[in-house]
Length: 333
Ligand SMILES: O=C(O)CCC(=O)C(=O)O
Image 1 (tube, rainbow, N blue to C red):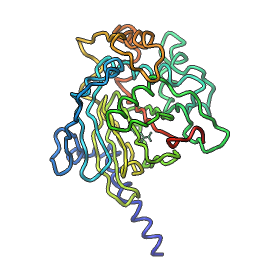
Image 2: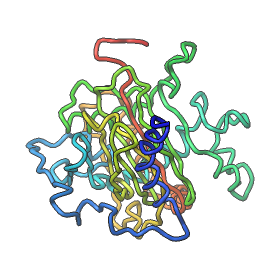
Image 3: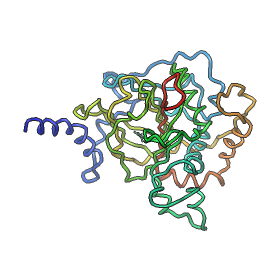
Image 4: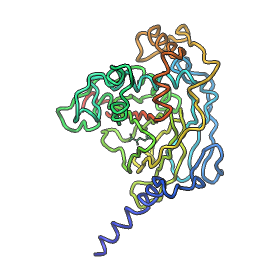
């Protein structure tokens, strides 16, 4: 009996907070939701990055100069880092478009595979003159590289996108993880009523490497607690372009998304969006065709091309969750 009542208590604190923020009636108060730049220093600290040389890849990948990045740590959550939108407007457009147009293409796995066979989900949504909103809303996730449930021995590694490997590498180098290899990712697609329940990410062989989480579009309340659900989670506001890094003690902590919130601004729109140039980069590690990459990046300045993606992101949120799967000297599972 005692054990049973204990386990109920253990579940409670995370679940209670999750339910509180998920609720629509009554609406939750935002009073305790951490907005990093406005938060008291007994909860959040802004740390100064010691960057003396910029990474020449940053601008081309849609990132602002590393010297301007705003990085925060949390007193209750050692190992958790938060970078407030280091993306340019063009960068946000590029990554949103990739997540919608390219990453859900076969052979990548999609949640809708169980229900239907779709080779190219985004193209299928626009097959007729009118966008198929019903099909558009069905996509909740796609996996890149090692599949999420890779422990089933038959599921082998599939191709990991070189652009996302390059982006992750810039971030990893910036944080001092120079041996990091992006090998698996889940791209999550949220609509205004979507949630993601409490979980830990523990399927990877390598649990020492950090996890990088990139968010675009509408805002979200992100909950992060401890290694079990008895720890009361903190609620953090994530906006478009923000990066959350779960490293060290925070790598295996429970986390969840109980609510998507309308974003008051649209950082993917800027009147002075300008081209990036490939002659700035000779140091790509993964991208072998810099001119082609830069061409695709710059296409997104064109509002006619961008419009369909804008329509999607105005009422949705996208999150790319990148992990290293293998240990440093390991080549396969
Ligand atoms: O959407 C988010 O911010 C978190 C996603 C997540 O936790 C996951 O994919 O494991």
